[in-house]
Image (cartoon, helix red, strand yellow):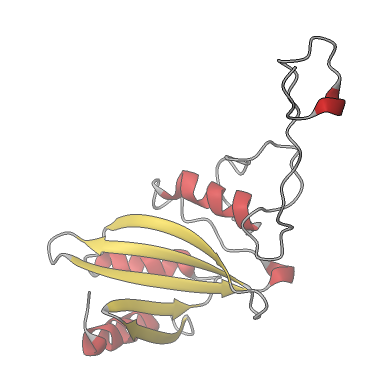
Length: 173
C-alpha cells in the first residue's frame, strides 16, 4: 500500500489528469483509499492503470445506511511490479445509485458489477449484460441493503408431500 505521502501524490496526479474527480484520501490501517466522484470513474481508473495499477482485483458494494450518500462502490487495484494496492471509493445516493460501468476497460468487473447491482441495487450504465446474477430475475428487492427485512421466506417442501399440500411446511410425514 502506498504510504500517506504516496497516496497524496497519487491523488494529485489523478486530480491533475481528471479535474474535479478527487474528493479526498483516506489512509487507515495501512490501506490507501482514493475518494472520487462517480461520473469519471473510468477515466480515474485509466489514470491509475497508467501509474502501474493494471489489475482490478475486486469491485465491492457497501451500504452506509442511514448515512447519505448511502451506497459505496469500491474498486481495488493492484500494481504487481511494486506489490502495491490502492482502493478507489465512489459514494452515490439512494435516489441516484448509478455508477458508469468499467467492464469495457476491465473485463474482470463484469460479474462483480452484476453482483453489486443484484445485492445493493446500484446500476452500472454501459454494462454489457446487466441482468441479475445471484437472485432470480423476478426477485423484488436487494438483499444486502441494511434496511432489507430479515427473517426470510418460508421454505415449501413438496418432495415429501405428493399432493403438493403446503400446509405442513417443514414437517415430516
